[in-house]
Image 1 (cartoon, helix red, strand yellow):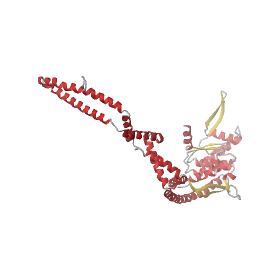
Image 2: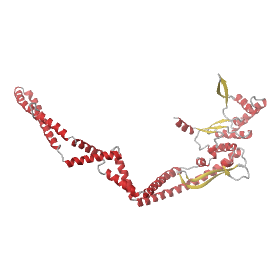
Image 3: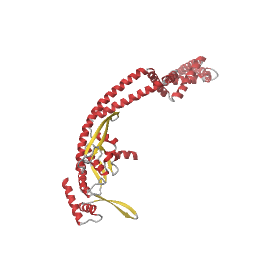
Image 4: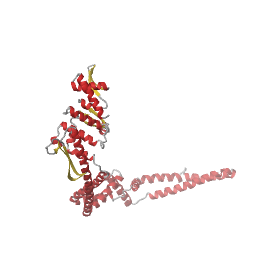
Length: 444
């Protein structure tokens, strides 16, 4: 789906345009940036596990306090539900047995009639089966005397007579069982009605009703023992909190180490990028326990000598933000998993001298990542491995976008046009050729 492709893209390509530095300026993103440089080991996993248990215990305690406010009312409801569910066995086999017995009892007269008809057919009337079987033995004996091989017919008829006798006996016993006491019928019908009511209110399946029963009984016992449950939960919560505090302290120590490293790296990179008197500081402040630990992280900067440190968003210009993002990317190169970085007009509001420095930084980052830079500065373009020219062309009254991979000579001319305008001059060509030569020396 489009949503899945978008999520996949977030792990493959990181895009930075002129307005995409806001994330860096938002204080809420600073903790995540710092943690990408922080060596947590198993600390964060253990903290997350403890925090999840801590939150679950908090929810249970909150639920307990709410239950205390409506204790009597909820106990009455739960007690009624438990008693109602206990009127019958919540067992599918017993339920089926009761429903079958109800069907049998409600059809006794018809069952008696059908069974009696079968008995009459077997033993009464001109075509009674039992009498016919008995009459068959006379001719069979005469047959046996003449032909001994017909003895098997006698044995078969004897088995039939035995089966018929057994069937008659079973049918008579069945008729006797059809007589019942009114009280027994009333009890069976009561159970059947109870099952129907329970399935209607707590089902529709009997298994769902049984699950409801177990949950209601557990809840009832829980509320009945509120004071004990409250003490147990508070002890449990205290234990989780103590563990969280200890782990969060270890996480804070690791974050402080990473903060010192980030400060030094950012100051060095920004100095290289032309902000010569910069001071960068990562500030950690204690907070309440939260899913990320117990720290709030803020980035502060002083880009000019004599100025006090202030939050990034308060003083950073768009040009400084672009360079700060580039410095941050350089610092995060070893831990950032995204393989492709796209920089759109990172040269905004900077001059040619800084363009060369930025081009060199992009080149350094490209040792570990694929860098794609959209730029109008030849100083940046000179450091790239490959140079593509993007242009528009009208064909058949339609505007087409053309992308050409330039060879070395075409590349020099394109850079010369970046410097001198639509048409390159001999001076700009010579300057572009010299620029390419110096760029190649940097990464030869």
